Structures are given as C-alpha cells and as structure tokens.
Length: 237
Image 1 (cartoon, rainbow, N blue to C red):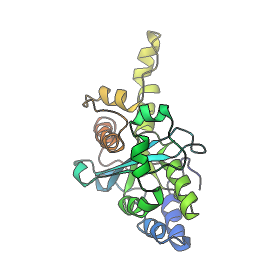
Image 2 (image 1 turned 135 degrees about the horizontal axis):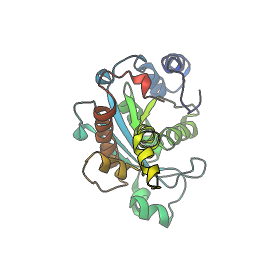
Image 3 (image 1 turned 30 degrees about the horizontal axis):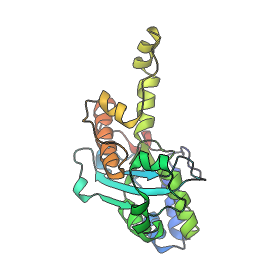
C-alpha cells in the first residue's frame, strides 16, 4: 500500500493484515487497534492531530526534530491530554531549520533518539484517525523513521486539512470569483487558512501548537463544508 489515496475498503483490511504479520510489538498493537469502518460518521471517530517539525521537507535527506499530538473530536479538543517531544535527528540541524522551528543544537543534543519515544507515539495514535495539515510530511516521515528503526512500514489513513481547503478554495466559487478579477489563488498554508475561518493567530512551527491549530481548523471546515454525519471515507486518504 502506498502513501497515496486508497480505496476506502483497503485500510481496514490493510490494518488487519499488518496486525497478523508485524514482528515489532508496538507496531503490531498499533495495527491491531484498527481503523474505523469506512461509513463511520465523523462524529463517532476519535481524532488525533499530528504535527512534526523536521530539518527540511525531503524525507530522503531530512529528519524529524519534534512531535506534537492533540486528541480531539468534532465537539471537543483536549490539548492538556496532548503530547510533545523533541527528538535527536539522524541528520544535523542547519541554520535555516533552526530559524524555522527555533529548536537549537543544544536542545537536540539532550534529546532522545526517535526510537526511544516511538512506542509512546504509536500508543497515542492507536485507534485514532490522524489529522494533519499537508500529508506530505507526517505520514512519509513517520514511515521512514519506523522503517529505519524497526525495519517495518507504518502507514495509516489520515485527514488532510490542506487537501480539504484546496478543494474548497481552488476548485469552488472562491477561485472562480478571484479569476474574474485576475487575482492570485488564495494561500492554503495553515495560518492563512485559519484566518479565513476567523480562527485566532498562533505562533507557527511549534509541533504541539500546530497540532492544536490543525484540530481547530478541521472542526471549522466540517462545520462549514460538511456534516458530523459525513462518513470518514469521504475525507480520509
């Protein structure tokens, strides 16, 4: 199974198969927790906002620096139950990445390797539908890190708030209206997208705070464009 959008019926079967085949105990437990049935309404699904800060955008040349998790559902966000870790990357920090996420050489020198927190991360994610803003970071970076440490794949369905916004503003009435005035396409970055929903401005590029921001954004997107009864398979990838 690749990291791209899957047929809705394949995720439960994939998780069941991996729960049987995985050798690593933490991964086996993660897969054994399963995923919601494709027609499960969003209102009934436990959600987990996930954000990584990394040394760069290329999964083949960069690594995870920090991890933020915030559990939520469509009616409640629980930041106090969230988690945050700084981890020591396998590749050195450069000055550009330090300016971006403000995690320093001294912090990562004292931090654990990703493998030391991986069991906790997987336990927190187990049984939840992951929510991110831009699927090109969290899933591929987590999969690569798990393959490097445990020699097995870590793939899962997720809801991407950036993908939702791209469909709404770049293919809908907003884009047609902008085109009439020859305007540029609206930004779908996290902070700019939140502004369109009247959500507060947060300091960017802290993994737990960005996870919180993503959770709030999904709630706003569902309220405006969808319904709590929308099946998960309409939005997961």
